[in-house]
Length: 406
Image 1 (cartoon, rainbow, N blue to C red):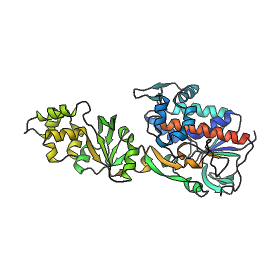
Image 2: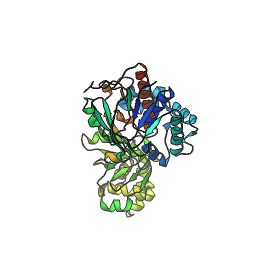
Image 3: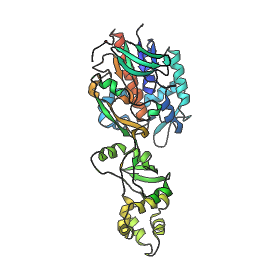
Image 4: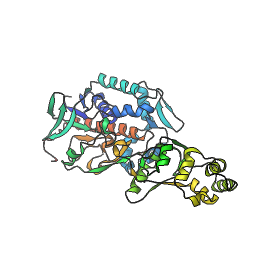
């Protein structure tokens, strides 16, 4: 067991890979470029750490779209039930919220991370912070460290450096050029679970910037979103962000919502038609449709004067109000990213075929999923799979060749 095994990246996928390998009695070193590990994990937990989602596994797997087939083995082995059992093993009780999302009872991520790091320390895992990977030197891995640059060689490596969202927390996709330099195909990163720019009129945004739009439906889902100075963001928008982003790449796209899901179109038209013709628009909206504030403001923003003056047209607009989108918000603001290492570049154990002994996991791979615990579960699951792959690799006495794959 004198093999040298490195985990490059100290997020959830990396720590999970380290847990798997160290539990088998092998020494593991985690290299993290930031001053501490798990920064994005902790940031996600500030408003309540959503660990996973308590829905039937077939439904759960369906959230991963085109990547389902490649992720399914990892998620079948370590899915939503296993995540809850793992957290319980760390002394962290979980509960299922009203939306079937699973949270720690303490809500925050810090107690779980502390317990996790304690377990890793007990298993002999060494964590080196402020050790940033800077590429290859022949068969070695070069790290920028407080003591200067160092080149290290290993028997197996798990790369878990994240995607391109939240770069200030460490996921800056700097690794792309080094892997592409070794001939490894990487799909361009694009924002996922993101907001969108909208060309608001100044009067509207001065009045409603920061306002939540609650109790609406869009694309068959109920929820809410927020008006920002730039456009729209929030859970209901994020749920459609992949489709909207892809549509914008081909042409115009709109975010369509029902502002009055509790009323049928016929009932809404009838209620609006009862309002006096001389009544103000605000009063007709409030009394006839039950809408005021930001909802009434949105109707005024995206309808014509003629539409607002005719009950049937106004009712139709309220039931299917379309907000024209300009572009996704920058990837640095996105919760996650689409794109990454192509699945054709890895084997079933997540080893890079062009770099034997080097495994990848987490958001470095080309997949995306909505918010709701799916992202974190897949990171943990692929981290376990890559860790098991690296463990099997060193057990077979293989080594990382010095120049193969260049």
